[in-house]
Length: 214
Image (cartoon, rainbow, N blue to C red; front, top):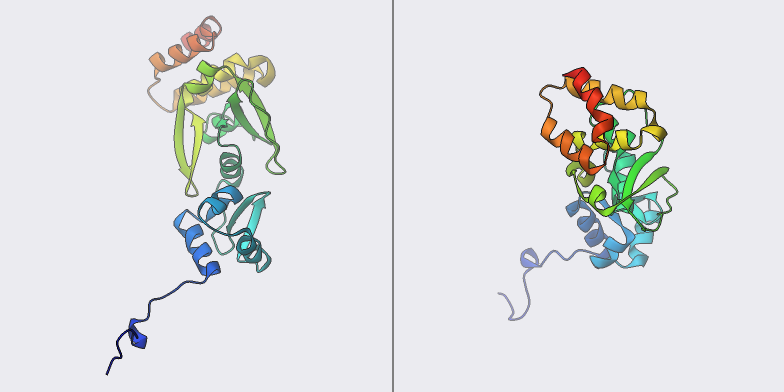
């Protein structure tokens, strides 16, 4: 007999504890959340820090946590930078490395941020920042999903134009190598290269190098 108002044991709802609910939220969002995101999803700071102290969460960087049992990240530097600097766009050497258009190994994450933006401060990874004008910043952005995280970076064609724009800082040899490696990938999107070169005001600079590889 079932007494009115009392559920049998088999029908009792499965109520999650605050810690289990927090872990479930992390799992739902790819295993990584910033402190601000966790708070927005209703995770109390006390629960967040308790999970960290119990080694069920690990701190990637100040204000950034991931599930401790998650598999190692394939791109920890880019993922951390994307989560901690949401306005940043991976550019120059870091973008070249992602697109396999350089033999250089970036020892920092190269990030473009809008002009007049405040420089972000991270303990990890090291950043190399470039302040782009609005038009140069906004054009040529693509998104890649790395380790369940959306990372913004510039397309190969926009990256080429950017590199020639910053050739005095990067070295013209880096630009030429990038162009040659891009050429080996297959069909060159000349219309896009020329568009971004004009945007970056390097169309006259890049033209002889484009003619040499055609």
